[in-house]
Amino acid sequence: MGLSRSFQLVLFIVFGLLIFRIYTVENREIQAQGEIALANYQQYVQTIDNWNGSGDVLYQQISKDFPLQFFQYIHDIDNNNNFTHGSLISSSDDITSQIFNIELGQVHNFPDGRLQIRLDTTNILSPSVNDFEQTTTLLIVAYASLMLLFALLMQLHRRRINYATEYITHIPDLSFLALEKSRFPGVLSPIGSALEICRSQLKLSLERVRKENDELTKAAYQDPVTGFSTRQRFTQHIDAISKSNKQQYGVLVLVRATELATINQLYGHAAGDDYLAKLATCIRKAVSILGLSFCFRVSSGDFAIFIDRMTLNEGERFLEQLKCYLDEYAQNTKSDTIAHAGMVPYEQGNKPLALMALADSAVSVAQTLGPNHYYQLEKLTGNEQFGNDHWKVTIDDLINRRSIKFYQQPIQPCNNATAVYRELLARFYNAEGKNLPTTTVIAMAERYEMSVDLDKMIVIQSIKLLRDNPSISGALGVNISASSALQENFTMWLKDILSKHRNIAARLVFELNESGMQTNLDASHQFVTAMHKVGAKIAIERFGLGFTSFKFFREVKPDFIKLDSSYSQNIEQDNNNKFFIRMIVDIAKRVSIRVIATGVEKQDEKLILEKLLVDGLQGYYIAKPELLLNKQ
Image (spheres, one colour):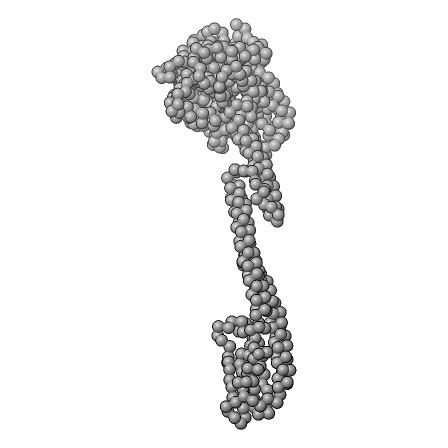
């Protein structure tokens, strides 16, 4: 039962008991008055105890002093003296006599007759009945008033409860409207206070959640090294431009960290991250003086910059400023090249792939122009292959001119009985003598099927280096493309030229990528066999990234395997890498293959790798690459 009905029931019971109490008091008073009236009548009758006249006269005499409801006198001898007046039964309309049941009857015997009377109670009942009616009416009015007041209060109470209910219902909507505490007076004030506390605490909690979500979003969509937005944000931005119905235009600048792979290889990944962070600083300084711009890191070494409402002519000033910062960075670090940039225009509706292909072509052209150069492509269609064609001409030129320099990085043996070698690192330059990005040169050579010619030039220059410089001792590792090694014509050519220089061939270790060699195990085996016949050795680099199996050891039989640098990074914390290296070392030793760990950048990594019984160590911690000077 609800509070409202419970209160009504209690109020009804209270007022009912009050009315019953008043009725009891009034009834008692009426009974007392009736007894008094009956006693007075009895005294009066005693005064006429010897009456022997007619009943009519007796009635007239008694009725003068006492109101009678019923009178009956029966004479014992003479019926003519009999007299009856009134009735013993009250009228059915007399509700008062029904409520207050009082009968004032008396029977008296005279010498000659018998008298029976019932006194009329009207005079006795009237005052009490009036008081009872007035009091009852007052109580009923009070009851009705209280019920009406209670109904009004309950209606107001319901409104307050409905307000609280509606407020609680809208809390999930995160509206957090100000609470009207005036709606919660008196006993409802704790509800108002609780709602206010709930609102404040929930608002604070959501603020904390929002901040944490912003931090997570920032971590998910912001590159930790450069501080730029990630590729996901870039994809969303370029898609928005592609699908936009509003007029938009500007320039897209693609900046390529062309030295990232070289720095990672020569100096380690920590140096690579530092290089990217400083390159991002150069970009950030260059765009700081512009209008609205958006910077993204779209891949490991590529950055995209959208500059709104800028034309190519206006963008050239930005590129010049960016080149100044890159040249300054290169001068401070004594580097030849930092990055290259390509700029293309964009507008709403451009297809993302076509736009990126054009920007990539612009960067490709810039890479052939020298250190830190930039290039602009104006048209959005028709010239997408121009940058790549330019690379073809550039690679053909450097092959013909044999524009190559060699750096060397030694491999440290883990025991004196192990014979290892120094790795030759090829660097290329264009007709103006400006350095070209090695990774891009090799990638473009493979794209245009020029890798065989490029590898031939590298081999010829390596032989020439050792022939013209007797002071260079020990074995040297020469990197060639696996795609070249798997071609029979290249293998025959290499075998033939090494046969003519067997003393030099015995000092050469050809390094090939594992993933490329595993594409054709038969051709790989034939190449290794041919090199062994002329005295050269084979090293499989970046080992462990492809599908490595015992069949590879058994059929290819290289002399060295160089573990990918990812296995050395933080090996002290990675038990999986330890297990893999231990397994590879065990298998390699069974078939007389030497294992070299690369990318060693910390002392802890060196110590653990030595405990795992690898044969050699290579990396920034062991020795830095240095230019190999040779006689001209």
